[in-house]
Length: 42
Image (cartoon, rainbow, N blue to C red; front, side, top):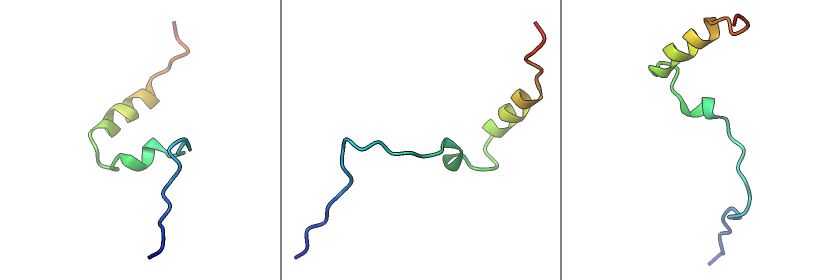
């Protein structure tokens, strides 16, 4: 029986949060709003 070696617990995983949010998720509305706001005005 072969030994299966898993991922090292000390190794950090690099992932994109964007991949975990569905394209039709309600949070996309907030994202679209935030992209429209002009943050340069005081």
